Image 1: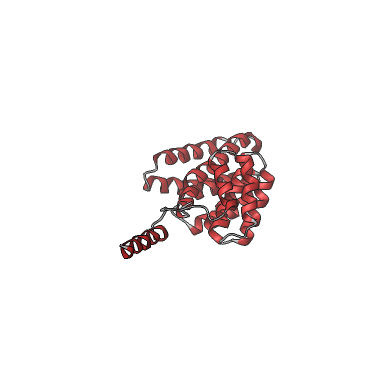
Image 2: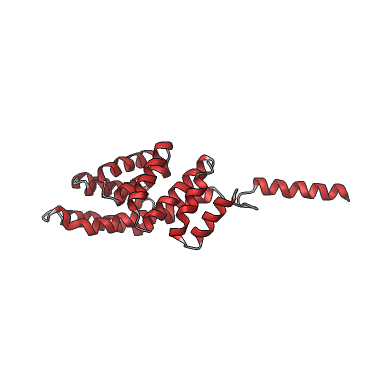
Length: 221
């Protein structure tokens, strides 16, 4: 009887360790607090909690996750300069990571540093050439930097990718963007500022809810 109980206990322990998501739980109190605040949509309050967790020196993937979440929270609460600085700090530590560079592009474009944001998005599309959203980010930052021809060229690449992937909504979005960019040509550069700001925010939101969510899922939090 005792042997049977022991075998059952070992089996349960093996399942807990090897099966994704089974018995998964935050590794420490700081991460648990940050996740709880974030999931209950206490965005402003979560910022200090993410910072507190980062100060515990977590493993690389969790550090990246927390750093990006903190930048997103800064941006959602209108603290764009802090979001930008945090994204730059993260990129200095992990310069070759896809999520880090996408986050950097998002936060630099939010403060209209379009040239630097374009450099980050160029790295994004080089790292993951099948991710159409990266091309959209690059195209928008080219446009913000006054490079309309380059922007249209890149957006056409994005449109082609979305068509291949049967992503109808983003295919249509990009097709409309291209037409709108061309229509701004006769007007002063600042005429398109609101349009550009709204589209850049759309990239941030789509990244958070789609691309970054896939990264989050790999962490089994």
